[in-house]
Length: 467
Image (tube, rainbow, N blue to C red; front, side):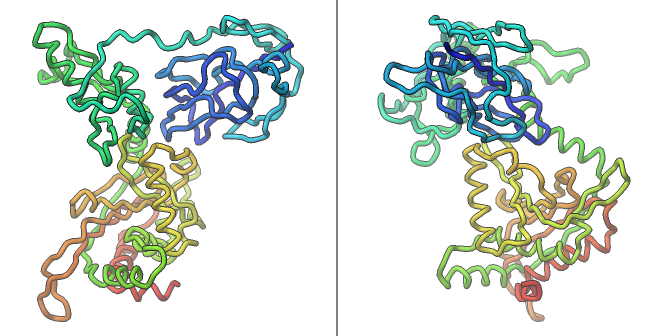
């Protein structure tokens, strides 16, 4: 007899209460091993592969791709026991691995459950809860495609791997029945990007409108405005779109809005001559060993400045009406991705040297690009470094990453006229800005922090005092 166990969406940590099913990794009838990933979900923090704590045969799935499920909802049921394995294979034991995500373990079930033989048709099997048998409604699987396939001018080969990295691009193509093998990617080495799929959808929609037929569906994140709501701007007519604030975009919107509501922020800035810092980096990289990034050097400057001005490595406990100064520096850095703005966090940045910081920045940046950052890698920051110079701008007044107390902004480093040693010269100049919570300190502290950062940028030898 087989024992049917129900696996529920676990607590993914950091206060997350729901997740969207992006892609099922198993089907009804598949044999799964303990801790095998069975579904890919997207939370407001990151994309996560969820492992199943049981080994056996999948008897039911709950929720279609694109469905949002609250934590604790059934994900799937697994038949565990001697009747669930193929002939000649050892029977699976109803025990877990002991591994965890957050909030759930994969230890063996504490109580014996009612045994139910899985139906051969793949319909939902019953599971025992508090002595009662419940019949969940299974996922009937994806509906038949009803849209015409989109063909791009430069089709890809009919076989071999499809050059796609982002799970969101795959989901977008599935939702709109776009054949990725017939698209020519505009990314590096022919990588198919989200923009390529959206361009294909627009190309499909254009002739339909010409012939007077309904336009092809737009992306799942956008829906046409068919009528203007009462009180809306007259400019919001046909052709406008509504973009739901959900997922990462929604989480960022909520956090930034809360920051503006709660934090009385102020910004100060200064221009600095970064010529010597750039020369120091060239000399460091010429000496052999792993290359040191400019971001790592700026991070090292930040941690040294925070050691001198710890007021800025803190947060305000509004309920207790206290400023909490933190002993460790967990340095966040802003990273722009296809999924939106994310802020990965380098743990214990104050204890790392430039080489270690470079390696960790590279690892987290790659994870951000591929959408594989974990919730733990996106939370817990105490101070943020924002290098908006990569966008070709000099300055900014960013919104503080709540509940942190400050953010250092770095503009582009470009040649500018500068008075150096009493003479006009062309030097590498950068604008530095500090946005800070005025509740944790006054302008004198903020100015002292920023001036120390600028001094280290202009004369890297200043850092030797703290090394």
